[in-house]
Length: 154
Image (cartoon, rainbow, N blue to C red; front, side, top):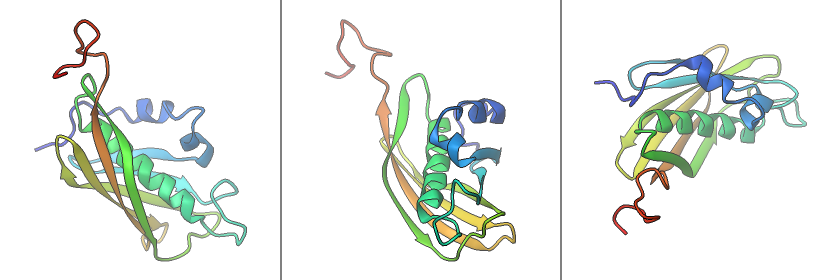
């Protein structure tokens, strides 16, 4: 069974990054399967720390980007949206400048109110650089189904 609530258009997802942190960091969504979403990010002047290796915060930004996109694609966008609630990351090895890192978000739990995603980030050689877990809150989109200015159930 496919997880996604709608068709995925990679160009559309990447075009929405214009003018955002994703564009600044060079994050691109590259592929998907029936229940994973994959992207990449360059290890360059925008994503390294002063020591010349991948900044841990850049890895976390990639992880949350992938989890958030995956979560948003897994809900009915007419009724719901997702927001990051908690993220953690364990950095296992340095990402080297001039290379790319690749992240894949996989669902651990996809519920009505929360999602938990695991994001594994690897380098060009396929070695694990970082493993992250991101919890998303699933929220009702305000105003879509409201009557007389009230949210359903209020």
